[in-house]
Length: 244
Image 1: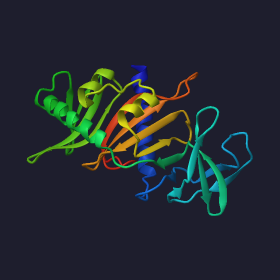
Image 2: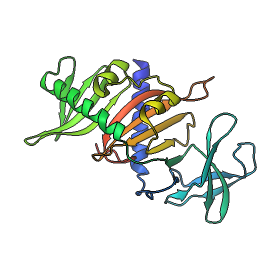
Image 3: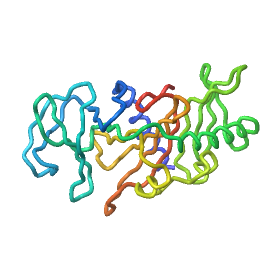
Image 4: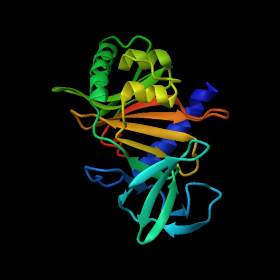
């Protein structure tokens, strides 16, 4: 129970952060970084022991011609910010990586069927209304929809439970290492780490056939060289723009 409350607190903080820093649409081609903070240290090398200077970051996408990992397996991005050349660490940066995801769109089809079954027979799920949005909650997760005459409109889904994840997405992603996740899901549309926690990574897969995003949160524990999946979310809108 304590772990679930902790994860829900992280979720709320990340949602608020994403809303505050909803970024403009990135260029279609190439690798681009969008700052989630106004200031950052720019390093002369991809190493936290290298010389650095604090710079003001623009509210726009910055070209990333190359990226590398340091000896601790953290990412660094090569940038040129208004004439200042150097390396930005992964935390506090949203990185545009790939295109929209057909795999995530296929997982959504499984999600829609599971959601419809529960709406029809919500055994084990509690139902509540908040204006036009109806929420269904269980020990394994939550989903929110708008139910109207023309059908059901999806708003949000989240789970940190293996059984619930498999029921809704058709595959259990919880506790997978990042490398195994990438084998299943391919290249994400975006990735980011919060400024204050470099060990958290959020891989976002924007659906190819609708305006929705599958976001997967991973945490790197002591002794690990990569993160493991803690939570999955599916929300209306593109990366960083969940609509509640």
